[in-house]
Length: 217
Image (cartoon, rainbow, N blue to C red; front, side, top):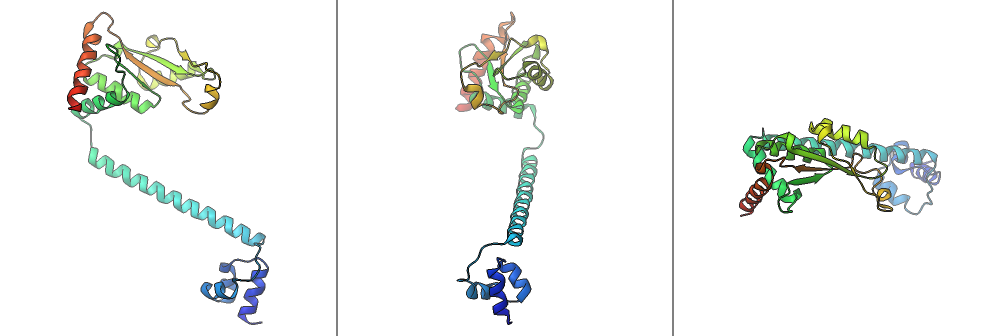
């Protein structure tokens, strides 16, 4: 039996071009020419081979993705460097423009990302707002474990339990099902309270508005 005939029989038996190439020595371009019209149904070996190749390809793509992410993070770290108070001050204004409350005389930010909440608190510290003037309220769904949610947010923000207000539960029908699996610890609403000191009330709100106006030009 010559190589061409062997290749045809192997193809009819359900083997891939790669396997046939290894068994016959024929180039894949030659196999493509001779076997184009040969009926082909992948056998168990070929199906397993294909699955392994797909898995290997997926693993390779994942490694490449991780490598690209690491490279981007290294570049970002080099370009940003250590944040100064001025950097945090400016970043906080930009954050408030996008996420902060624009309601008159209310300084509030709402977010479910603990990193965003952390940046907001760092900004408040930079502009002279003590943590004792920050009130927190968790907004979530009936399925949320509010005790664990408060522990989570308190641990990450260092806001004591005494400064957490009663949680707000979203009981809209079907809403919690739609959001199932997202925002496990709910959304945190942070509000600066004057507590008898106008510097942390309307005056602070006006100052932040001025910051935003100046930054926006």
